Amino acid sequence: MVSASTTFHRLCVNFFLILFFFLLTLSKNTQVYKTINYLSPIAKTTPPNKVTTFITYNNINTMEDIAQFNISKLPKKISIRPFLKKDIDELLHLESLGFPSEERCSRETVEYRIANCPDLCQGLFVKNDDGNTQLIGEIMATKIDSEFITLNTMEIGQHKESSDVIAIHSVVIHPDYQGQNLARLLMTDYIQKMSQQSVGRKITIIVHEHLFKFYEKLGFVKLNENDDVNDPNSDFSKNGVWYNMDKELVDF
Image (cartoon, rainbow, N blue to C red):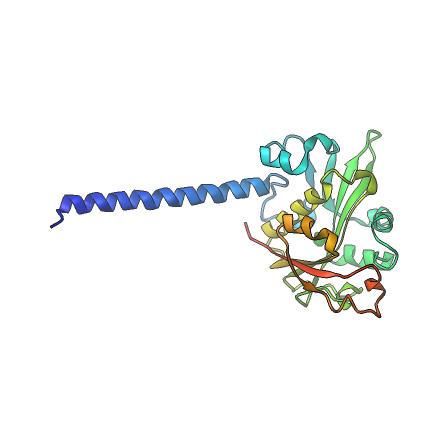
């Protein structure tokens, strides 16, 4: 027969074990949040199209950060912000450096996206020694009414504000700044902003096979070939097979 004191002792032990594992889990979740939040500590009440992320050596200072981004190679004065009308010419030039003619955005497409979904279109800028800023990276996206990107969803007029699917149409880093993990920096900041602001349920993108590893490291999952974009009658299919990749967003 178990005494009352023994039973009470066991209950106390079980309680403290449960409390210990709860606090341990909470600590891990908090650490994940801190790791993901170091790039742009923004308030959830701030719309993403009003947020500028300033990347400095002060907010890239943990061992995880150094391992991911190699701060010794980063430009000293870089920032991430939504595109403005004044950026269009630079953005078109960057598109021409990043994509063949059949894949790059037209001026009309760029103007449409900046006007209708500025919170989804972000630029990476560097401030030069002369005080002028230069666009060195971009993400262009819209919301779409399907689970995956199609030729139709790339067209002007196809942004669907009420949708919860964010479609990234282009990610480019200027050739002079490649090899410094800036694409990863830009994408990590973008994913964080979309997550914190509850902008959508997921991000979808189409990529060629050589980019699988890059996006998998960011949490994207390779799904299948995109039959619509791979249509042999489409100019978009001239440069290889396109695959769908998705990333579910977590609201922090």
